[in-house]
Image 1 (cartoon, one colour):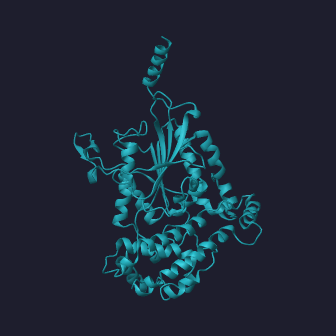
Image 2 (cartoon, rainbow, N blue to C red; image 1 turned 45 degrees about the vertical axis):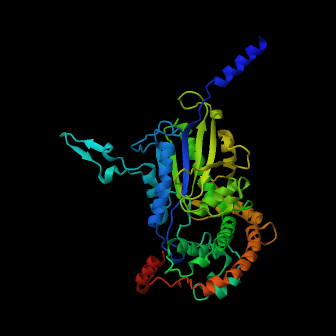
Image 3 (cartoon, rainbow, N blue to C red; image 1 turned 180 degrees about the vertical axis):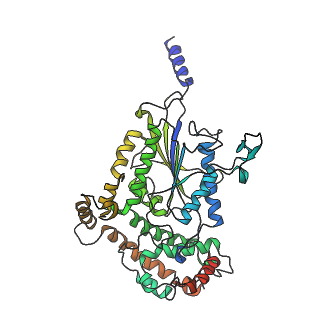
Length: 456
């Protein structure tokens, strides 16, 4: 009899309903889509890039907006956008702004006749462009450097890799033949690999997968170390500001009891690298030190397992999940969840998330001024700038007179010389050329624009 009673209890427990996880809000941060190469300046989003960000945005419509999704954000408008529920940010830069518009068209696509209005005289007016929806795009405070800047940090102080000179003479000025330009060279070759036909790139086959992966690996190592250094918070300032924005946005969802539901930000790989470092994502996967592909996106979900349909009143019922997808989200692919801050669990309680993120985030102007060491403009009245700047300087050099970030890439510089030596045959015999940059004068503007069109 005891055995039967115990069995019955176990059976009842196994049949008891399990509370489904509820998504209360989310913050998405996405990289721009495919673009023209940086080496020419004035980068523009390509049609391929437009498609990439639209497809990724469409995935998030399926996940967070659609009525058919089990991950739909509770209470979000599923057809017509409610501007009180969504906030979108992007720096005032061509590629990032256009990528944001394309992404948002995927998140809230045209709604056809749903977007119509009956006037007082009884006539009906339909919105243009099939019910195209407008989402207000605010200017972001992150990504201080424009995406079309030639390098992530032009004053990084990295030493030169002089082995580039015999291969690039006549294409780059000698002053630009440095290890810090590893990404610029990779970027140019990558654009050519994607867009140039065999006739435009006769020796395209020489850019083998092995050579390509070595180039992107070296470029990624260099850029990651510029964007993040554990002993120098100023290097990751964009990631620190973004961390503060993410925490603030999710907190708004909580304090508004779910009225604010979805936040979307856009930026370049430098900002993403900075945040990866601050979140200790390389502890979850070494792939987080590699350059994210075009249209990559990461998302922070605010979730709960609390029963009922009301917004939880106890913050201990709230958790945050981090997910990332490298490149455009298409087909059956979706972002993968990873643990933050070196934790073992993919879910982090809200209180722990706030505690750990507060340690890395820059959340106000005074702190920004202190980290950056600025004394002008909005920082003119900051009292802590000087002392904090001196402390940061001492920390970053470690008393040796050499920045730890510089020391950290010297080994990679040696490797670069070896790899580029192996690639000499490709550059010398492959027939692939990088157009010489000239000063932007009225006489050269038209020809430069033509050259961009040919190469992009």
